[in-house]
Image (cartoon, rainbow, N blue to C red; front, side):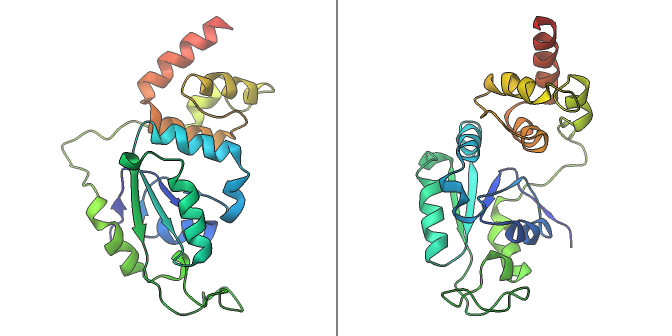
Length: 199
């Protein structure tokens, strides 16, 4: 079955939730690393920067911990930029785990794929054959301007990212994903060209 094209970043708790969603969606998926979001200032700054440009979807587990994480994230995002989605509370145990969760319910990773699909369907967009897809910023683009692969790439990313409200210390992959939401490739090339000449 064809994946759903979701135009907004999706925030989930962990990597297994992300892997589950990647089976169903074409979307940029951000993980909170569970409660790690509480002490990860870089990720919080990224979420705030994205919320300044686009709506964000929040989907956490249907248990107490998921509720706390959801509440924390929702406190960072203006209400008009927030889409809250929920998986049903179903008793069970994820296949990869030897024991059920503390509350004995399935998380996002254990939720049936068809249910995940039905939750996101209303937010999917079609890619028309006649419309030209947005050209994305690539790793090659970052490399061409020394934003990856050079001794001072990290500091270059920090300088570049500051222009768009991005936090310092982002790795190349996270940096590229964020930029693809915030600006077009054309804008990136123009800005990178200017910054390179200024150095």
